[in-house]
Length: 166
Length: 159
Image 1 (cartoon, rainbow over the protein chains, first blue to last red):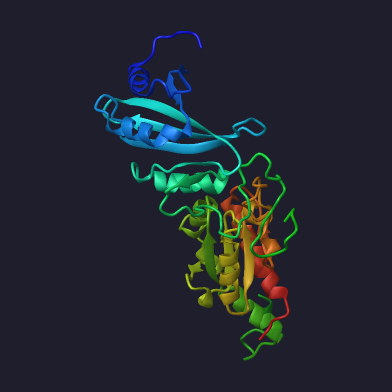
Image 2 (cartoon, one colour; image 1 turned 60 degrees about the horizontal axis):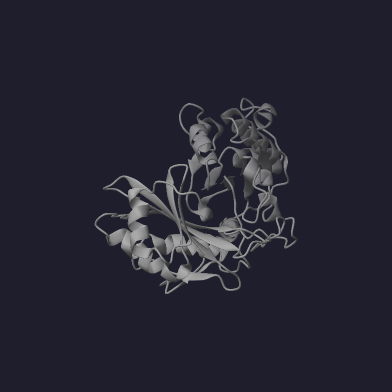
């Protein structure tokens, strides 16, 4: 990665977690940090509590399936600081089998439902989540529809004809 | 009105068939159950309110208890998760009952060809009238309603 002028946010994160960070860059004006899943909880706590960062809003939490790449999944967090009007994106690569990361629900209450959605759609498990159930789909649903290898014509109706094109 | 024209009141009586008489009564006293799940609901409100005035067809009274309703108006996308609820509502309605698929999502699933959506409510319910459109124009809805009334008038009446 070519040397570039780091933003204040990235400078601060690098100062704290320098040896553990996988990558650190600014893409289209968005500060992005890629970290291993082992430090995600500590990093998020730092983002929230550090007086120079104050990322007090978790605006999104989602995951991406990079099918056929290893590690296959990437959990993506977007934080916003209301006070500093600054955003940061955190990416955590997660490998198969049993993709799992630490839940950040103890730090941000909104993470509860976002992590449930992430589990429902992409099948990422969140360790220490208080109630990791499906949130959008029904409990009988098998698999995770946003997996790239979920068959596009597969249907799982609760009532009516059970054929796959229903 | 066919019923009125046969004989008329001056002679003190008029003749009809029981089926026709009951059909005439039923088609002008439709109580609807609006099962509204999506954006078509806005169009439904436009039809039901004063500008298009569904009331002049004797069909404007929404009942939010399936036991009091005659027409199940399915308005909006039906996904796999809510499908059992819709079937449950239909089964709670007392006969005679009719089902109207309002909007293209209820007719065929519309552009939702995915894991979540029922591709047309006729997979799970018997549908009497399909009203296409995304959403349907109010005139289309009124036309659909009149087609339903015609169907009721001309069908064998279960008593």
